Image (cartoon, rainbow, N blue to C red):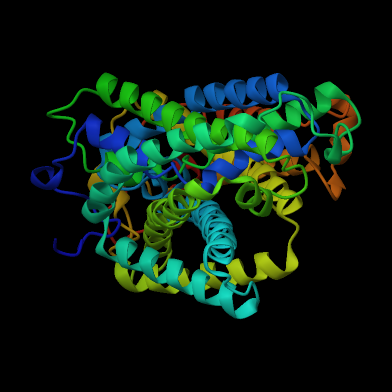
Length: 477
C-alpha cells in the first residue's frame, strides 16, 4: 500500500473514496485500546460505586458525542482537516489556534496510550517469562510500540483504516474474553482503597467523573474527526449518513472500552493503579490475549493520534512534509512517555490533562460550529489554503490572516474554563459559583460562543485579492 502523499491540502473528489462505514470502523477500531480503557478506571478511583461510575461515563459520552459529532460535517464540506477548516472563522493564520489545540490533544492521548499499553505489556511479560521490570525493559517496550506506531502513522490514512477494520473484530473478541476472565471477581461496591469520594461529596465527584471519563472522550475528537471525513465525498454520501455514522462510531468506540475498564477496575480492585492490578488479577489463560490487546490496540490508537499530530504540525509549518512532521512529533511523544512513567501519578496526570484540554478546546469547537451553521456549510476551499501556500488574501484573510474577534472570543472562553476547573492539585476561583462542581467545559463553551456571537454579527465575507491587505481591515473583522 503506497504512502499517503496528502498533508492538509484540499483532497480532490476522485480521491475521496471512503464512506460512512469506514468512519465507523476507524472510530471503533482505533479506540478499542488500553489508552481509552483506562478512562473507565477513573470513576472507581474517584471513590464511586459501579452504578454511579456507569452513569457518569454514559451521560458524559452521550452529551459529548451530541456536541462533537457535527464537527465531522465541516471537513466533509472543506475536504481538509478541521484546524485548517477553522480558518473560515479564525482566519487563515488564526486557525493555528485549532492546530495547537489539536496537537496538544493528540500528543496527550498518544503519550497515554503508549504509556499504559507499555506498562501492561511489561507486567504481562514478567508473569509469563519472568522479565525483569526495570528501566531497560520499559524503555525497550516503549520504543517498540513507538516504532510500530510511527510506521502506521507515516504510511497514512489507508493503512490506519485497514488496521482499524482488523482491530474492530480482533479487539472486540479479546475484550469479550476479558469479561469472562474477570467476571468471577467483580464487585459493584465502591473500592475502599480509593478512600471515599475524591472531592468529599457524591455529586461533585460524579460530575468530575462525567467530565474526566465521559465527556473527555468525544472532546478528544474535536480536531480529529475531519482527518477522516475529508476522505468522504459529499457528492456520494449525505451529511445525515455521515453524522449518524459519527454518532455510532463515537458511542460504540468510547463506551465499549471505557465500560470494560470500569468493569475490570472493580474486578481487579484497582483503586490506586490500573495496569498492575489488571495484570495481577488476570487468570493465566488470559495473559496472552491481554498482551495482544495491549500491543495491537495501542499501535492502532496511537497511530491515528500520531497521524493527526503530523497533520497539525504540517499545518503549523507548511514547509514540512507530513511524513517529516509525523516523525518529529513522534520523538516528542516518546519523550513524554518516559516522563510520564517516571514522574507522573497516573490518576492525577490523566485528570489534569483531560480537564485542562477540555476547557481550552471546547470554546474553539463551539465557535467553529457556530460558523458552520451561520454559513450553512458553505466554504471557499481554495481560500482556506492561503496560509499553506504561503500566500495572502482571500475571503478568510480578515486582518493579516487573523480574525481578532473570534480569537478573542476563544481566549475569553478558555480563560473562564481554566478559572472554573477543579484539578487534584488546583481549584479555580470560579468554583465557588458552581458549589464546587466542575462546570469548566460548560462555562468555557458558553462564554466563547456568546462572545463570538456578540462580537461577530453575521456579515457577508470580504474578498481580498491575493497578495494585498484589505483596505478596510476593520470591516473584515
